[in-house]
Each structure stands twice: as C-alpha cells, then as structure tokens.
Length: 527
Ligand code: G4P
Image (tube, rainbow, N blue to C red; front, side, top):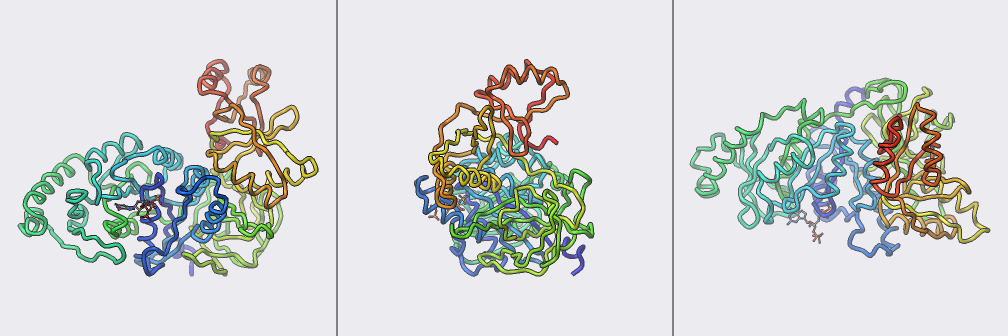
C-alpha cells in the first residue's frame, strides 16, 4: 500500500470522559459497529474504581487488561479506525494525558445528568494545548438529566469551546423518544436495545410533515419543531475547518448502553475527523507523508509476569513506513535497534505485524531501553516535542528500608518513573528522592512493584508540597537570589531541569511576583 493511501485511510482517536460517564460502554458499542466484537459485554471493564485501593490483585489485573485493550483497531466505511484506550481512574490521569499526544482527535463523553465534571475539564485542557479536534457525545439520555440547552451552555462555558449540536434529543429519561439528526434531517426512534445495532431510522425531510406527529405524538413533535428552529437560529452552521482547528465541537446525544445515537456519532466521525496529522520536533515539523519513518514512544507497559522484566513500549508512527526487522535509530541513545516481534493490537488480540503506517500504534518489546517521549527515526537526530509532564498533586519522599538493596531500589524507581508511573525529583543535599503522582494509588502500585519486581523495600513519607513548576530565566542574578531564598524548595527533574516545589498556591504566586524575570511553567513542555 502507498503511504498516502494508508494515511488517508486511518483515523486514530481517543475516547475521554470523567469516570462513569460511559466511556467503556461507548467503546464497546463502537467496536460492535466495527465488527471487532460480536456481542456486547466482550470488552472487560478496564477500570479498578470499584475496588479498594489496596487490592493489589486488581491493580495487576488492570495492568494486564489494559495492555490487551490499549489500542483497538477496526475497519468501518473503508477507514481503519484506531481507538486508543485511556484509563478511566483519575489516579492514572497522567497516562491519559500522554496517550492524548498520540491521537489525532477525541470523542468526549459527558453524562447528561452530571454535565461537565472535574476530570472532563482537565482532559479538555490537555486537548486545547494541541488544538485537538473534539466531538462531544452526551450520554445517558434515557435517564433524567439536565436540559439539552443548559448542557450546551455549560459545555461552552466550562470547556471554553464553541459547540454545535448535530443531533437533537426528543425528551429524556422515561420520555426519551429518540434523536433527530439535524444534519441528515432524519429521525432515529429510541428503543431499548442493548446488543443489536439499531436500524429504525425514519427520514423526515420536512419537520412540518404530519408523520412526525404520528411517530412521536403532537406535543413532542411541536417541541422538536420549536427547538430545531431555536438551534438553527442560535448556532452557526457546522464548520469543519473550525472543528479541525479545535475551536468548535459538534455535539451528539444518545444512550450508549442502549446503543443509541452511536451510529450517528460514528458515521459523522468517519466523515469529519482528521486523518493522521504530523508532529513537531526540535528540528522541523514532520508531515505524515514524509517518506522517512519516524515515531515516538508515549506509553510503556510493564510485563505482567514479574519473572520477565521486559516491557512493551507503545510507539505512534508519525511518518514513513515502519518495517519489521529493519534497523532504526533510537535518537536519545544514538543506538541502532531492530524489532523482530512488533505487535499490533486488534481488540483483544495481539499479533506480529510486518509493517505499519502513520497513525498506527505498535507495541515494541523492550528490555529497558525506552523512556516515554523517545523518538525512533531512520537516522535523523530529531526529537518529537510534546510529551509533557504536569505538576503532580501528591508528593512523598522515598526512603529505603533495606540498605542492602539500595541498588535495586534505585534501578526500580528509575525504571518505574521512565514508564511514567510517577515523576521523580531529586533534592539536595543528599540526593533525596521526592516522588510525585496525581493519585494515592500510584504510591501503592510503586511500593508493590518495587518489592515484587526489584526486591526493594521502601517507605513513603508525605511532603508538604502541592505543586511543582519548571523554572527558566535569562536573568542570572535573579536566579541566584531565588536559589538562595528557596534552597529548600528546589529540585531537578529526570532531565535535569530545575523545578520549584511550592507548598501552596499562594507561595507560588508570591514567588511569581517577587521574581518577575523568572518564568514558572505549569508543565515541562516549555522548550
Ligand atoms: P466509564 O468507562 O466512563 O467509567 O463508564 P462505563 O461505560 O463503565 O459506564 C458507567 C455506568 O454507566 C455503567 O453502569 C454503565 O452501564 C452505565 N451507562 C453507560 N451508558 C449508559 C446509558 O446510556 N444510560 C444509562 N442509564 N446508563 C449507562 P454500572 O452500573 O456502573 O456498571 P454495569 O454494572 O452496568 O456494568
């Protein structure tokens, strides 16, 4: 296959949501449409939210399941759809943020009763950093939720993006009748349907057609006519260019568990979503049709079996063609590497592939060479940008409980932070290791894995920091004075960048005021 054809054929995206909004359910329905699975219930819930945080077996299970279902590919309408899964649990949010660097667009699932939730806002912030195109799916219309107009206003306000409904709900909860497709001008009537694909679509070209009254009753028909008039008055026509620029989000309504409104979503997604896009590097922007192969690692997964220390690195292909058993340059170490068993991830199945194209994600077996953010090329020394680290929310100092095992501990914590389980900051004097995460759960994962995989025993002591910011300046004098004043709050990250650990938001603001020539960066993507 020619590269340009392969690129045009692919759609690589992620589904994101606040936990419980219906991400897993929607993913499953999309796979059902794509023929990747035959019946509902085949995708296991990739989450651990309902278990006690100390249930390590569950953590292990989660890690295993999420390898298998990390990338799901299927063909639909002549396109190859690659869905990149993102962990639902908020403690794994960083993993999700990184996965978002490997997609070209996202579908954001909202619970119609809860509207925009905390995790929804954070995920959207990450999408906005790279102007990722977003489609919104308002789920659970079969339950009583917020009024659709109120929801649209809330989406615009809290997510800071313009919206444009492309379907419109008729009633909700017990009175939910279906959705009207504003674009195609047809009506999809609701029926409870958990396993099959809904096919009852009635085409109503003219809303004044009395068939509408017959189908949904006069009062619903009247309401729909009025609302559609309002929508067409208030919202501009859907503009694909604005969507592709990340400025406008089309909105769909439905009920994922009932497989409702999902086909409209998928069909439109296929039509409007972007094919694989290029990525920026420290040298130049790489277009997907660049003939030379390049790609970057955005996720590393440890092997489930503790006896085998090998890991799987997830590589997103940006340009050219990846081929099995071909030497590529690992830019950071300047080493040549070839891969005998690169895998693709098709639903639950992992299989060895011969070649892969831009937009594809492949798994590479790794014995510890890869770090998140690493670049592979045909030899060019360039580094992809944009695998940011964000400020952790919980900080703890790592203490070694077994002096005989300090080497193992060192190795373990370095490998785990390379995998992105947590961030590590080194403080002086004494090379103290401060580990930062977004959730408590990671500390349990780290402690468990250090013992089980490295034989190292450790303890975490809470440290009073709430934020880490990366600092840069050209004013050397101010930097020296800052260093003297804040010696106890300075650390370096894994790349040796200087980081200020602030105890409170207020102290951070004070520092910003007192040192106006120093820039305090909220994430590590400042270079
Ligand atoms: P997540 O991955 O975003 O965390 O959400 P998930 O799909 O697991 O859905 C969370 C809960 O919401 C599930 O119920 C699921 O069945 C339900 N759900 C999803 N879509 C709809 C919908 O359209 N309408 C209604 N009424 N419920 C929906 P659960 O009780 O937590 O799990 P389960 O026992 O049903 O699996």
